[in-house]
Length: 286
Image 1 (cartoon, rainbow, N blue to C red):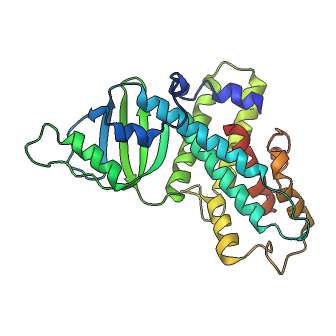
Image 2: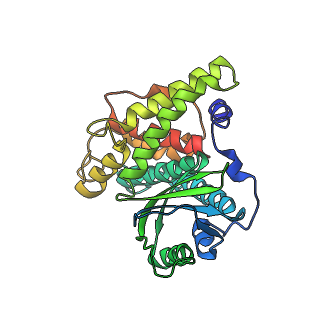
């Protein structure tokens, strides 16, 4: 998907990758090191901003992005037909979902946003810094799942607690697709590249908002839940007689490397739409 990479790289927050550091240093390590200060006063226990004192945050954000991108292609590379269970494909779909989930997290970070689980020990570190100039413990921030937005211009990192690690992250990805669609025509690329990128992102957006997922964009998660917890869609025994679905899911480990095929999604075949959406996400993010 070189044409898409060419276009999206002009919109992305690539300044995140300007600084080098050990690959094991991540956003949580930056919080634990306490090299930041509270950017502004707040009465909220779930919304706050930190101002970074050095480049450590950007090194951590880049490493987190790389980790998720690697997790995406590592996961999808494990998908294959089972030699003794020829019709079994449920776990292939579940793995394809998680590959797309990791890819989505990588893409969010490329565009300046992160979703992370911040545990109590880390939040105690933040609270400790926030209260350094206070006579009493004025600030008390909750642990939990946070949406984190970063701005390289002023080195400010914004934190806002969310509820659902899958649904909320997919909602942010849906919002990101809207932003991308608005900015593509402003890039310096061949019109054919812009049009192909617009078509790809539009098709992705169309797929993640299928069924009852028009506002959250979490259709891939919805399908994964149906298959994983309800054993639906004929991917577990007793299997449905849809060999095309089986072929599509079992070929994911190599198909994600190809830019062709995504435009061939058939709107009446949800498993095919699911598979190609996962492939497209992995392809774009890696």
